[in-house]
Length: 176
Ligand SMILES: [Zn+2]
Image (tube, rainbow, N blue to C red; front, side, top):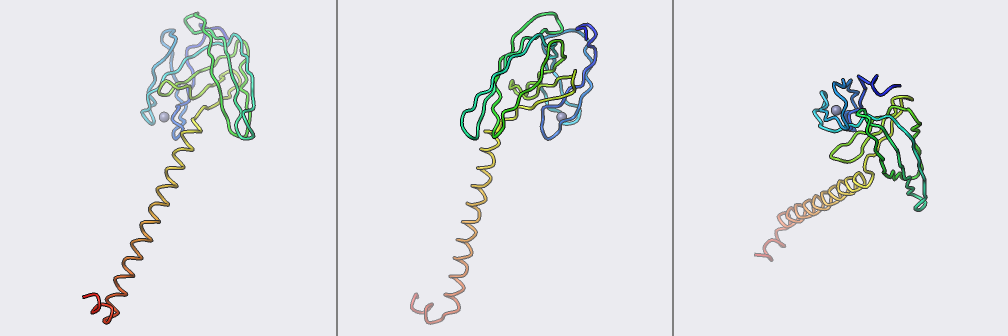
């Protein structure tokens, strides 16, 4: 596909609870496009590029974590060139993403973090949601649940204790 022929692209919303496909019209070539999802109002930036070359190298950190380093050389719609370098860390699996020369790809950034890469030529995408952040959130929820249960148990114990005292007149009089 010729760079100048790219006039309309389907961009995935990077909000993972939305994942709406947005039909975006490219009015003028630019390095980056500021987009607002019509469905969930999430604001993000996307770079529409043509792939020049891609290299990726995977390395195993331990039994759980593996990291893949990518370096992708691209052409922007403006004709400018750039080199994208980023890493993908994935638990339990080492994944690779196909980006071949002349493929049209979209790099989408949410809060300046690479979140989705779409390969429009083969109609595939890869997401880079933060596993660490997800893990932290899960731990916090579990902790809240445990603290909640602990306080509830304490409350039940106090109530039962008071009832016991009221129901035992001799204990009550000895306390007075
Ligand atoms: Zn959305």
